[in-house]
Image (cartoon, rainbow, N blue to C red; front, side, top):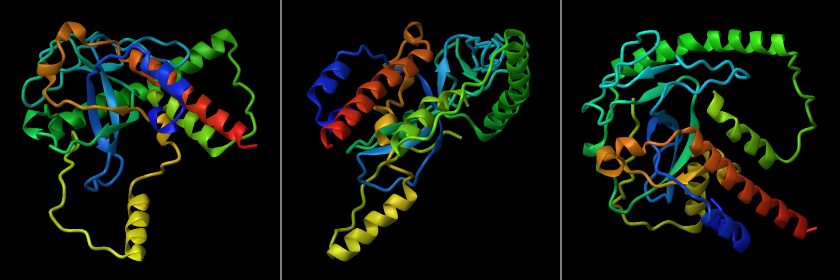
Length: 264
């Protein structure tokens, strides 16, 4: 995220930031998977080793989650989701309203999807039903807490540059069938004129989603072999992922603001 900005100070700060390996569920692909791209964009849900983190301001309660079998523990007795193959950890949950976007680096050797742990469509539908039941309760708990504490909505500030709007949108996105991560190369030779190359570039932009927010979306490496890369006792609190992301975004956005100032 920071390396492409050519800002040594921001890059040094980002490289000094301690990072961890996180367990995630790939919910959907956010754009068409054209081959030979340096990265691919996905909407994901970080997986947690505990019940839902409580947050009265947002209406989050500990039971707003679904266990992943072989974990069978839940305050409301919700039926655990069953993956294929069996999930390699016994303490994990899907949290309600806990999604964000990431960019996954492509690999020349491609991803071996035979190593992936999948959530069958029937189990995915069960998850959506359970977590969907939590949303109106979130709204109710949030309203009750805000009424009891006299909370007031902050004054809306005038809109600034589009990039800062993108920053806000993605920093808030965490409060809101496993997709393919195949990045196979095409065997066809390329023999395009300048005009046709421009046409292809335009087509890819149309189907790839907006790039103005690229600097605020985490760029990550992905491993499909869960047990081979992460021990159960090392599964981190997924809230730490957002702390890392927010720190990197601050470095990136600060660098961009400095560039804008230098140009005036």
